[in-house]
Image (cartoon, rainbow, N blue to C red; front, top):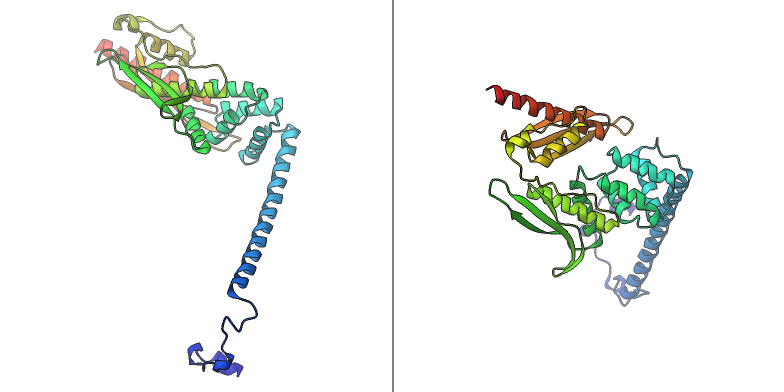
Length: 327
């Protein structure tokens, strides 16, 4: 009989006699009872998986707590340091060694936006205040990070996104943009707002305004200032030169204060492994009446790459000025 069944299609088998056919009435339990048992089994299986996941999570969290207390972070790769940072911030496991390492990695561009957000928005105890201040002040040259951090925070908390109040003033060829960023609860109510910031471009004004707002959200002093250039005669602006030996970034900022350099910005990209990072910086600005110029610099640190890019841009501006003068 077994061989016959194995070599016969199911629908070729004869139907069972009527008195042997299964019906709901002939079953020892009702369909509803079977469904109830199935639901109980599924619930038990789900609870078992949840307990297993909870035990695994607690082991991971325990390892992160132990590592946070050990105080040895410098040589840890990002994959090992990230869970330590997360657990320390969420559970307020503050230590001077960990705070110093977070600050160091942030300055070197080794922390991702999500990790910066955790430190700034979850590390709310007074012990983390110096770290929050260092991170916010470190974004002065890259205020676009503040936009990403507050956008991620609003998405995580289910809040309305950052909004702006913008205004443009001045002559058509020399507009000054004023922007103020705020976090609304409702359209007509404001939860938090930063200072109004002025700049020669709308994008720069908004980025500075968001960084000012981030400082307010984090409870630290505002590191931003207006970037709008005062009205000076072009000849006076061009004649002013930085102090010999001055840091290239400071020299560019001094030019920007005269209006000779406008829309100055730095874009920095990091490549390479954690133990040997490589940073490439691009400095871009509108210089005098010669249009937009840009230059590149590379180094093993963010500050070094930025300094070299600024120096290259100054050299390019000087070369272009000399060519224009002798033309």
